[in-house]
Image (tube, rainbow over all chains, first blue to last red; front, side, top):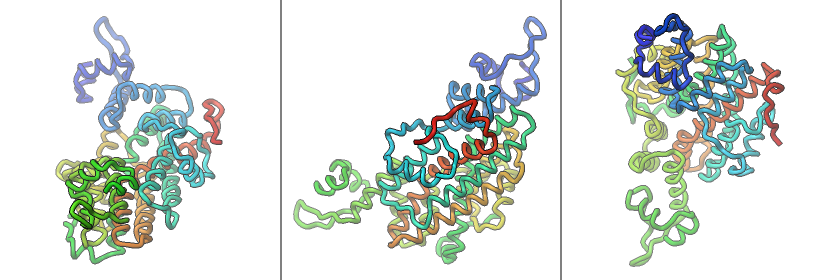
Length: 212
Length: 212
């Protein structure tokens, strides 16, 4: 365990905590006070850190995600668990039926179950747009749906490129937790790009430092 | 003011607080204890609620965003203010130069300033992917960038469709604050769709309720 701590940079006390919380599987016993930890423990430690530190999940939620990684259930199941782990629970009954119908029109060609957390979260956003007096103009929302489909296809391709089932499930949960943040950053950069192209005067009025 | 409160559903005490905090402009004085509030006050109240309740901004940050809405500066400036308002500040010096170079390769054809908060946030995600042992395979990241560009174009089209400068700036800030949440929900629904198409066996092992 001392060696695992050294290689991973994670304190022994933290590793013991992960073992107790059943986030990390026990090592192979090699003596009365000795266990051997392998490459899979190191990889699992990285996943645990990612879920807790980057994803901000609770230990209980992280355990659910890791159980899904370890299960023999199909990959789409891991997606579901990871998606639920990072979503706020929304009851369909709390939503404006109009907003829900609006989302269902956007995704009518998709195979999506009624309790998909994304469907409900997107309906909540539509509801808020409506409250704020923002209408869907020039296919704003359906262009979002088209872009989301491109990203989901890229996500599934990335998963399929992984060598083992565990590695695939890892990519599912990491991609779910971090993919939104990556897209959000790129969208923000793209907005500056498109705004600058369309209104080039900006750079003179509000000079921005250029990238080296 | 009693009428504005009734129409908007926002308590008088809250409206007074917004006036004091310079989020809401004063009404037109019509008598010693009377002011008249118009359509623009109602619209502004909606924007304030959206920023504080949905966007989760602090009063000080919301004031900065509203000042940008009111300013005569070009729209791209409002984008910048709104983007900074919802972003964590990341210092370029805290980032792995490799990750920053990775993002810059992805967006090398874009006009993006060095301090664009999205560029820095995306680099932070790339850094974390690397730590977690996730490589960019099958152009995963550049497909995110391509989708982000589509969404940014839709965002700018939506802004251009608004009738007045104030309405445009409103759409900029509301879209910036809520657009990520909409995309995230749609991506999650799209993942289920693509996973189901590619691995149809899932629906038998893990039956999901169907949408009515």
